[in-house]
Length: 204
Image (cartoon, rainbow, N blue to C red; front, side, top):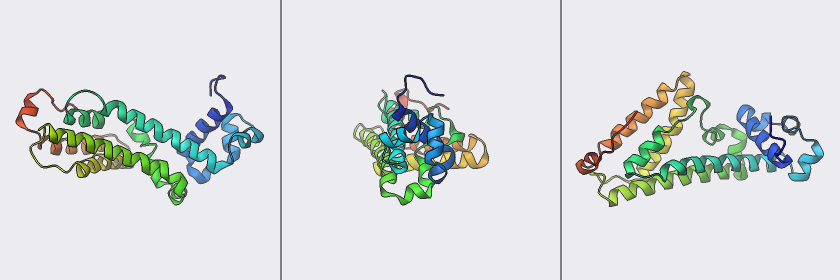
């Protein structure tokens, strides 16, 4: 399953990430992690204090990857609208859901201040990052209305996370796509004529 070059701590972290995704915190037992990683009990407790410590490392890794993926899109070229559009339309495995967002539905993760912290920090980072882009658009005259950057950013994050839920509940990514198109239509209505003429168009 894992490369022979992967260290034992890496195998343990990756195994925990996969099991948390499949089974949740309660269903991810130390024994299951060890078996999945091909590591003994001694090896696990040599590198990690216990299941909570390992789960925290796994959640942090998941949060870091989500942040890196989002940043790669949001830091691309183009107008503020174009970058938000690219983020919303980027390729996703919608029916699997968001690896970070789904952790908010795990009661054991939410109940732990330590385990919940990377999730909260990542979603707040995403909201603030998008809010900054909206602010750039306002300063540069891309939008005609006095949009509130935090409100718009919160709507973007909520649309993506809610879109995952709708898609999973219906068994079709169409629900996610519909939510994204609706938000983009509202945001496009706030663009200035000059911004529209610049060649930035909504793509589906």
